Image 1 (spheres, rainbow, N blue to C red):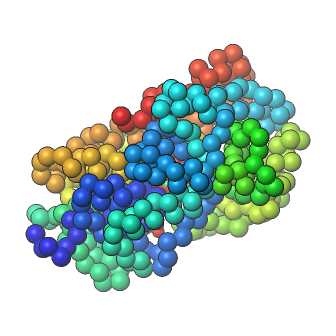
Image 2: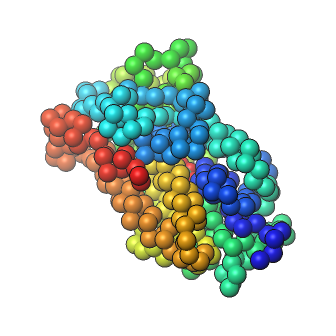
Image 3: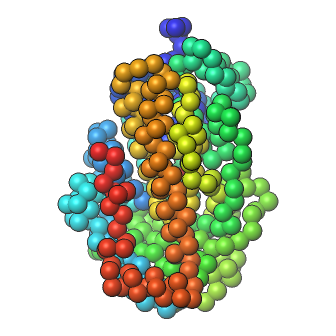
Length: 390
Ligand SMILES: Cc1cc2nc3c(=O)[nH]c(=O)nc-3n(C[C@H](O)[C@H](O)[C@H](O)COP(=O)(O)OP(=O)(O)OC[C@H]3O[C@@H](n4cnc5c(N)ncnc54)[C@H](O)[C@@H]3O)c2cc1C
C-alpha cells in the first residue's frame, strides 16, 4: 500500500461525512475527507436527535458540547392543525433518559455540524475543500478516486457520504435518481426572548399537511417546519429556495388561530422539495468491496421520523466498529452493509408511513386521533428505534 495514501477517504463533509471521519479516526484509521463546497457551512434549520443518536454522541465525548448548544424537550405534543385540539402526548425528558439511557435533543443543524467539525479537526483529519468527487473505480487494492479539480487518491476504503445526489453510488452500480415525494418543506426560525419554561416538540396534523415546532439553540430560537403537498420546483438539486409566507398559507388552507400565530411569527421562510429513495432492499445497496455508502447517499428518507441525520450517525458508528474488526476490507464492508441495511430500510418505511398518518383525513384521521388520545405514549413512542444499536 502507498503509505502517502489515506487508508480511508470520506467523500462529503455534511453531518454524515464528518461523523464517519470522526468515528473512523477514533478507531485509529488514517482518514482524509473531500468536500465540494468552498467552505464548511451547514444550511438548514433544526433537527431532532433521538436517544439512539445522543447516546453515540456521548460515546464520542461530545455530550457537554451538545448540552451547550441543544435544547432538551420535556415531551412531544400532537395537535389538530384545524381545531388546535390536543390529540396526544409522549413524555420525553426524564422518561427518555430512564427508558433509553440518553436524552432526546433538538439542535440547529449548523451547531451539530460545527461540533462534529471541531472534533474531526482535533483528530487531525486532512480535509480538502473545493474538491468534487467525479469518478470512483473499484480495484484490487481499494478504490481509485478522482475529483473534478484533479485530486487523485487510492484509499483502501471510500466512504460515500455525498448526500441525496450521491456520485459514489455509481461505484455500486446504482444509477437511479432520487424521487420527488410530492411534499414541500417550508422552514424558518423564530427568535425567542427567553427559553420556554416547558420546552416541547409540537406536531400539528391536518389533511395533506403537518407542522413541527421545537426550540433549538438552548431555547433562544424556535424551529418551525411546515410540510404541504405541492409541485416539484424548477431546479430540485438547488434545494434551498427563498419562499413566500402567502404561498404557504394558501397551501395550508384553514388552520387554528394558535397555529396561525406560530407561523406568522416566522420572519423568513426557506423552501425545500423533499425527495427520497424507496427503502433499501439489500446489503449491496449500502456497500460492496472497497466502497461503503452512508447517510443520505445510501438511504435518503422523508423527515417524518426525524432520523435522517440520526441514521447517518448510526451508520458512522457501525462502520467504525466493523473497520476495527477482523477480515479483509471487502469482508468488513460486507459486515457493515449487512448490519445497517435492515434498520435503515425499516426507518425509511416508517417515515413514509408517518407521513400518511400525519396527513390523513376522514375516517383514517378519526382513528389516528382516537388512538393517540386513548393510548398516548403507547402509539407515539418508538422503542425499537430509540433503544439504538447497542
Ligand atoms: C425538512 C427536513 C427536516 C429534517 N429533520 C431531521 C430531523 O429532525 N432529524 C434528523 O436526524 N434528520 C432530519 N433531516 C434529515 C437530515 O437533514 C439528513 O438526513 C442529513 O443531513 C443527511 O446528512 P448527509 O451527510 O448524509 O448528507 P448531506 O447533509 O447532504 O451532506 C452531503 C455533503 O456532501 C457534499 N457533496 C455532495 N456531492 C459531493 C461530491 N460529488 N463531492 C464532494 N462532496 C460532495 C455536500 O456538499 C454535502 O456537504 C431533515 C431533512 C429535511 C429536509
